[in-house]
Image 1 (tube, rainbow, N blue to C red):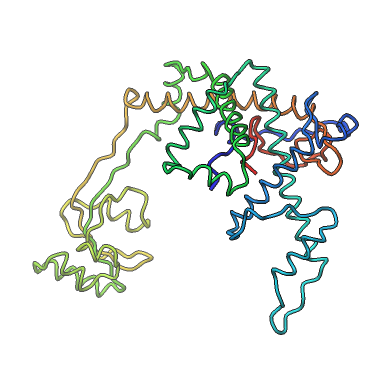
Image 2 (cartoon, rainbow, N blue to C red):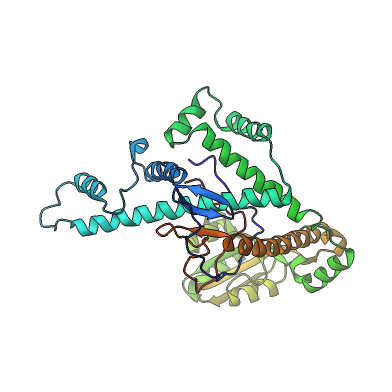
Length: 386
């Protein structure tokens, strides 16, 4: 369970383009750091701390019983990691080859790389967000952070001691939680500032949207039916004759129908919308007059006998009735556009100012290899908690 996580700035951030920026190298990264954003360094000790948290979280997520004792793979040799994996695997089954040390080392490397990338992305983007908050003059007080955490405790940890037990179990300290929650509140405030006033929509825009998308505000004709589906035309004719003799639809459906769902309902099939059924059946059902028994009708599923019991005419929702929902749609689109434009500028500015040490390079670093495909990174997408 990851209750304290740093979320994306907003669901409105979408499809940002990959930015191929010039490599800056790691000459400016201090010796005790793994990365630097402008003049702010991300220290190796901070990285190591969050790597331990990430390892515990990964172990807990995979269901390991003693997740709190999980260790970060010992790069670059991975001797301890290989030994642990060898011990955990035990002897191979009879006839099965023994896993080589090289294969186990590869597994350790993959685990380490995943944790490293996750933690670096988390720390770099948290730093970006903190600097952007200063640029935007957005502030979150200690009282705001504590109030938010207290609300989470009250909702998710009602029993005394549950909160403390939880954070110990995932390797977090209270300071870690404060840091994460502060960052999340900064995200929320920046979102609010970027989208402020962007939800305004004119009547002309609403009218234009309605005219262009009029079919979206239409409800198709619907019919309630009684049906019997048989494998052969002969069976369908017998079912129709039984109905003509006065037998009930429920009795006839029970005896002749092979459609189990409608059969259980006494032959009833309700709320059928025009154009949603098999073509031959749809044509017959919506051409039939109410209360008249129709069939046999040949379809790809068999032969139908049917009767329309209720007709709900198609309806076009008016502009006046549609106005509120259209306004909401357009407001959301406007906010999305504003956030996307902000996000493209945000990522470009901060990636260009982010230098990473060799061995700690991720795509958020200016010296990262260029990507050939578009990414979906968002400005304050500081990733989930490691």
